Length: 132
Image (cartoon, rainbow, N blue to C red; front, side, top):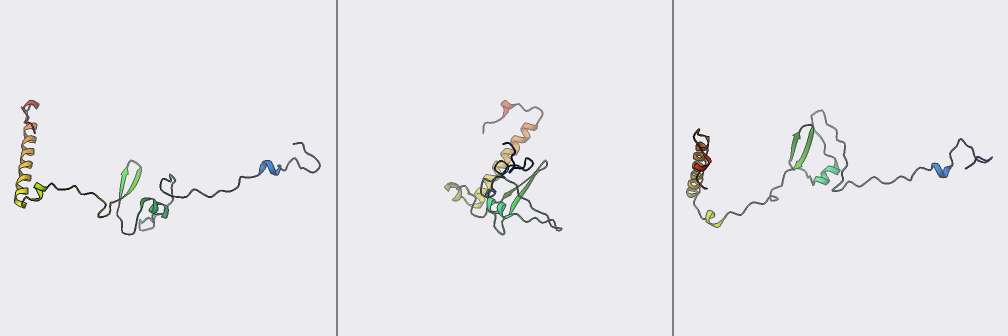
């Protein structure tokens, strides 16, 4: 556009220089890949931001696991009581007495210990191993 008497060449044309309309920031829901800021108190405590609490389904009293790998720190929510699946105990084991179960556990421990000692002996060969 050529400057005219009504346009100033040093002031940009309003149509060409219009800033884009502001948009709402993305909602922080599950799957949001952004980062949030948290500040530590003088006592070493962090307040977990609401977006993170909602994303992780954290509630008052929940426990978390904080893992460190190199310079990365991850936070995972511990399962709540009743959330973990407990394997079904076979019927024949449920019918056993405590003494019978203890005897079976002791036998298995002894069998594994003896196998370990055999493997660590200097004259052990793989073909000497008993089938399980």
